[in-house]
Every structure is written in C-alpha cells, then in structure tokens.
Length: 119
Image (cartoon, rainbow, N blue to C red; front, side, top):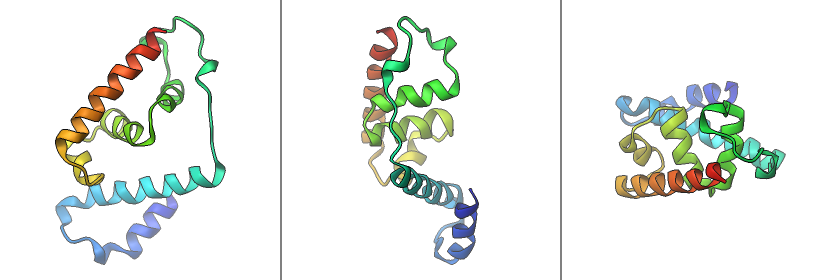
C-alpha cells in the first residue's frame, strides 16, 4: 500500500482525467501486487479444500485460494468485481478491455468456480 501511495503521489501529473483517479490508483495497486507475487512466486493448491464445502462456509482467505483455479486474467476480473466492487465498465477501463469481453470472462469464471465448489 505504501508503494502504491508513493507511486501515485510521484506520478499524479500523469493522470489525464481526475474522474478516473480511482481506476488509475487501482491499476497502480494491481501492478504493485503483481510485482510482489512475482518476486515471492506464491503458489497454492486446491487440494487443501475439504470435499463438499458450501459457499457460505468459505472465508475470504479460502475464496482467494479457490480463485487460483482461474487463469490470471479471469482471477483479476473476479477480484475486481466481487472484492473491490468495481463495475464491468470500470474493470474494462482498468484492464483496457472491451466491456463484453469482461462480462464473458466473468461469466465463464463463475461457471468454473461453481463446478469446483460443487466438487
């Protein structure tokens, strides 16, 4: 978080539209997190989940681990949509994607998570 705030402060002159400040800040945060993950080379397995776990019984940490079954792009979209409460339009601007692509990837990610949870 500190690196994100520092980077934001140092590069505020690059922000073209003040109305996109939140999106711009989140993009910086995502890139910072991505750098940290690449450095630490985190990996987790879905095998740690007990069979038959219901959605209501999963805590945030377990959800994050469950999301590892998705590809990186889909995982980002799901996290931005459900955990950070961005709209599809905001996510498409943030990730520089078409809104329809974001919606499709979100739908496919939901379907895949549903299958994994039911297993």
